[in-house]
Length: 512
Length: 97
Image 1 (cartoon, helix red, strand yellow):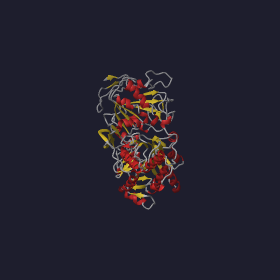
Image 2 (image 1 turned 90 degrees about the vertical axis):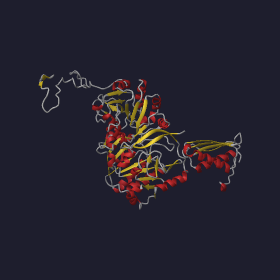
Image 3 (image 1 turned 60 degrees about the horizontal axis):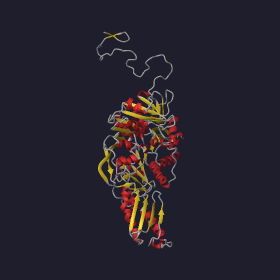
Image 4 (image 1 turned 180 degrees about the vertical axis):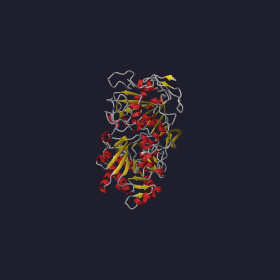
């Protein structure tokens, strides 16, 4: 028998139970609680620190650790650079940066790489000067490229262990409830950041909009947050989102979109209650516009739209043509407004969206997906990562996740860009394996994957310019001529992880 | 065909090419090529330019090619126009073009 702190006699052992821990006082084992009662000036408790430097020190960032960021602020992101500058000034070295993606805003990382602050990158894609530098071998360790679903999988499986997540949030209260759709730097869904917030060992929020507690509705929950840093600005609104993505006037894009909507209408996958994901490319936007006409004509509604959400999806939602929206990333001002206002425009995290190994991701429920491609080869493999010169300039994104999950995956692309053919013998880098790609729609014709005889049979009487993908390749080559192969060095600068964690391709250093 | 001054044709729009030609001080052919598709089509474009110069019987030319991924037919049209302008030719034998 022993007296516990409440003065009760508690036996040290009770049969059938594990070892007993006697009560030690209400405050003893409860760290995050006000230590003296009585004050009514709420909220007393907060996690705010004065500077990013304090957050870095308090969160315990050390040499060799893995820190994470998200890319919801896209080209307008200021937070990654702010944090990395502080980390560099503190003399930290050999860090791994796991950002859900990297954009043109992240050029300053080149300096941190050269100075040994950053040793490794894990991300969906890279663009701009940083991508050029990576393709020219600035890193000793190859970049790990993942899909959006693949990133969630590797985090949940413990393959990617984040020591500290530095997450920019457009609004936040003193205790860490944060969302993405209010404040001057609103970006909409925080779908990628939500995964980091749950799984990182330490979570630091950085905000330019501190609001009254509790900041409901919240995307990131106070129970996951360690520290909060208020700053003047987390992002440049110009770079965070396109004002509104306008319907293209480019006749080539419109033609491709017409073919694509015709393919969808007759594919067997468009019926009342169907579901769809279209991206933010100009052709995709036009496809959505044409599908609206089909839906009105046939009196169909869609049960839901998934994915990166744009204003024209919102328009269809508000017209009642799309019942629900599941949103992992909001691309424009309209999508950002809608996720804040519309009850059935729901924010989802990257795992819910596309993690192949959880108990069910949304991409598996999609009937139709419209995808882009930099290159597609005669086996229908798609490259959205490296350009025709072999240099990294894109991102894996949700491409491979939606291609396999959907009932029909449709790649839309001009057959020729400049003098570069889109259809080739062999893509430079495989992001999405051809066995998951069903139809290619170009301005010069439509090719159905021979694996999808069922789709071909439904389309063949529908007055579409159907060709084999080899024929499309030949058409392109006739106009452009045969390009010389790109020359590469032996050094591997990137590995491409398929969504299931296996390696599907590697990227080599380009030769100058 | 002899170049008497600088002839220019084309633009820097995507899928176009800006070409300027003038006579070479050392009476030879020199091609300065800049192209966004140089790695894949650089040698092809250079050969095309040489072939066209040959066809037009130009033996002294400094050719500046700033290519924005133009197709062969575009490069040919721009180069021929630049050469005509550089040579001060104003009558075109259309059936030979």
